[in-house]
Length: 243
Length: 244
Image 1 (cartoon, chains in turn cyan, purple):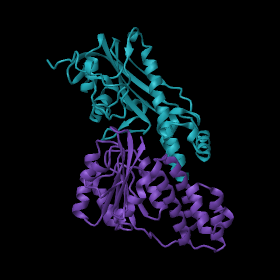
Image 2: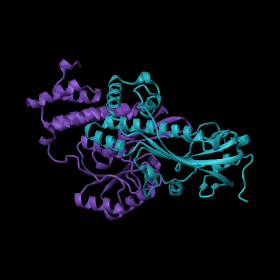
Image 3: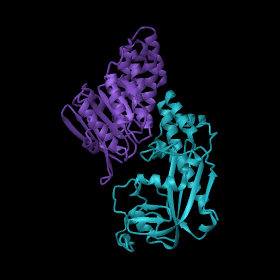
Image 4: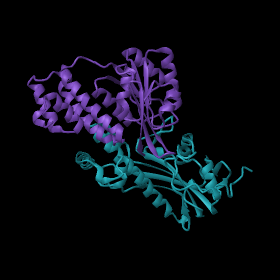
């Protein structure tokens, strides 16, 4: 059975009260949004023409080896000690999926065109795009999770090159394996992508895992992306070796 | 002061500071009637933006509110720019360094600079060191503004700064972007750092030599869970903590 796929994703525009959008714009409390800012949000969202629908591409492989620093499949070696530490504690078969999603080049064009009209509007549009591409990633993970080989498996949170301790240089390996060019995503020399509203990421799948992110094993205190407390008691348990 | 008591200059300043488009129109109608000069319009608009900037620096306000004021300021400038002398505040070359394609932050900063009267030469994104140097030589700009949203192009930023300092030591360099903070900016040789468009103007004033003693540095102290804004003015140093 093919362990790869491509999907058109159905991501509605966020509305002006969308809490994720408001957080992107710096508002934790919707009650603090000034009237003119709310009018800008409503007006900008209403103007977005969503002809181009988001699209995603994914591919999966069995994890063949986990060492202290690496997670390996037949075609890829991911150098990320914190995720390797989590993978080392998973039970049974472990599989790795990688995926890419994009809103497409049309959305970039909309943001660029809006900059001529209003800086505030282009800032809001960029935030709308960020929220939508994040949701596209979540929707694609949901699609991947329904694949027959993953029945009975649970997945980690997604993780991307450039985050945690997974270097952005891993993008070239990920692109070689997944070939996101098929859905119009180009890799830039520095590891960035075009269109700008694109995400590449990985998810690990296993029958059992102690937690869905490596945060409990990770002592990096000031991390913006921390999803759970560091738990000293389990942090050094069952660490895979390099042998 | 009520709007009835305001002169055109007050109206324009308040329009930008309070994001009041009715007052902006009123002030611009006064310009049409010849009651206020283009230079006075520009000065009033900049004062309005300075008010917003100071307010936002104190409370770490959302950037979108600053940009609403910038939009009003641009509307005002559009009206008077043909009557203004060219680049009264100097010329800036700006771009996203090689290896990065994220340009929204750079575009916002370029827009704020232009709105404040700087002559901005925007080289776009993924710009190589030699392109920056050639543009600086061609345009005789006194300031180089560099941006990146990613950590990998920081080495290219460091290289551009080093080459610029070596070949054009009179050029001042300001940097900004997600992977940077004031300490890192200093360590790679930048003359100034702006965390966001909110902190751009004092940083620009510092390196442009207009108010050499004014500087604002801002960073997030994750240990203390506070946003730390350090304001240096006239040699004095104050420190404010705002909940992160």
